[in-house]
Image (tube, rainbow, N blue to C red; front, side):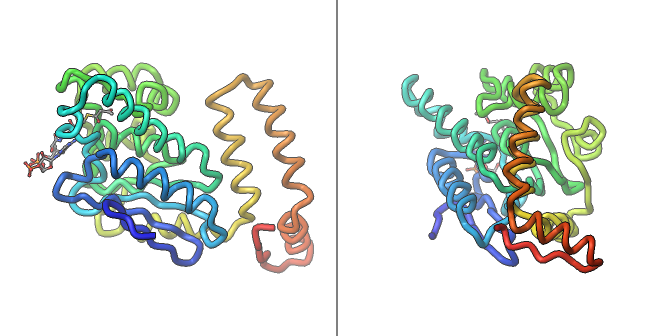
Length: 259
Ligand code: CAA
């Protein structure tokens, strides 16, 4: 499928979504949000995809929700716009395949929220993060007030949200917002390496582990453990589980088929 504001490629079980409105710093307008939601859902259902990487074309990852579009909206349309943004971000949570943010540049406002909606984040040394919404009389509305405290703690999420401060990649690494920082030219290669490793593992086990890990942020330990037990019970009868154990016992490399 052709998209207007995204580029989507698939190779070796890895899909790459490149946010592609470089002249607007990849700002999230209604069309991008709809396309992102569609792309995530399609890739999530595609057997040829085991991992998804999201990155930005040009200088920015995503510089936030589209301020020019928002400024023209009435209240009803603004509510719909925010709901559309939340839905696109939540599609990443619901997607059973790992989604990695490869943050190449500015990840501000809705862009930082997009990165936070991914399973984990890798950054270029040029990446910059922040929630500048308070400068506009807004605050993070694409899930930032809910995901940031879960991932970087309430204190750090509050400071970033209340001050609108922009932080660099080294600080993002220090506070646990990103897992790794790479020289700009190496970012995609390093993201691909991690994606390839994930793609070589048993896909159903990876998918179930994603849903179980998500539960950790959403529920009690007791309910999470119950979910984990059931998820494990679903994985046990798969062909890939038999293949993985047989390969270990017979000292050979496992070949996983996602079955
Ligand atoms: N929305 C719409 N357009 C944007 C944009 C955004 N979020 N961010 C950048 N642009 C546009 C600029 O208006 C400019 O367009 P023109 O060439 O037509 O003037 C173009 O992208 C290039 O931007 P700059 O000239 O500003 O580039 P820069 O290198 O000087 O600065 C920047 C880059 C620091 C990212 C700066 O553009 C900026 O501060 N952008 C806004 C960041 C922001 O406030 N994000 C939060 C948005 S609100 C939000 O996200 C709400 C929510 O939670 C749902």
